[in-house]
Amino acid sequence: MADLQCAARVFVARHGEARYESELVSDSGGWLSPLGRQQARALADRLAGERVAAVWSSPMARAVQTAEVAAAVLGVDVVVREGLREFGVGDHAGGTGDPDPFRDTFGAWLAGDLDARVPGAESGAEVVARVAAVLQEVADTHRGEAVLVVSHGGAVCAAVPALARNLDPAHALDVPLGHCDVVALEGDADGWVCRSWAGIASRDAR
Image 1 (cartoon, helix red, strand yellow):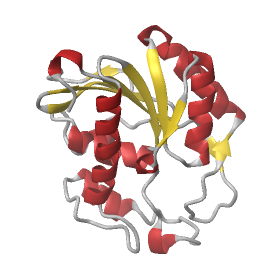
Image 2 (cartoon, rainbow, N blue to C red; image 1 turned 90 degrees about the vertical axis):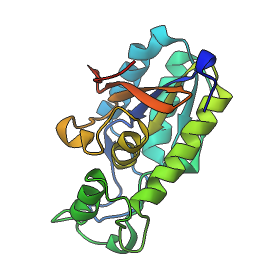
Image 3 (cartoon, rainbow, N blue to C red; image 1 turned 180 degrees about the horizontal axis):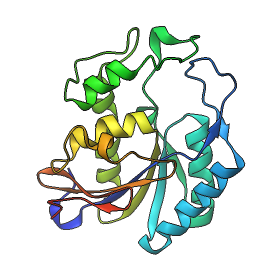
């Protein structure tokens, strides 16, 4: 973790509203809708006073497009990392998604059971580990700076509460993360602490 005296401030955002190639369950990236682009610009405007040094993004198209729109407003570069992608759909690929095939596994993750696995894909522990690795890289690369990280609802809601010591694993059930909502994190000698989630200040944030 970055030194306590020069910790990175990391703003983790869900991508903007997207449209998809098919209604079938898929790992396909999709693309931003017109509203999604507006949301990405508004995201950048909200962070304009933070002097953001860079935008890091998932490689999936809807996240990259969000990152690029925001980075253009902020006047910074985009860095893409595989570890920020959404959790994979595994054996559910090609299904209709009705009912939600991920409900039980995702619910287990939010209940603290990170060993639960999407059939044919990742466990919660694996999702958390790859997101954590990228956040560590961000913290080490941008000590004393602010950074915007664009990822996905599932990955963020599973990983960030597991990493931030002042969040319950099920935090996202109480405060859902909408498109381009932001989780403000700060690293210190003991790991990550959440300062706010979707604009709501976190309890015990010190």
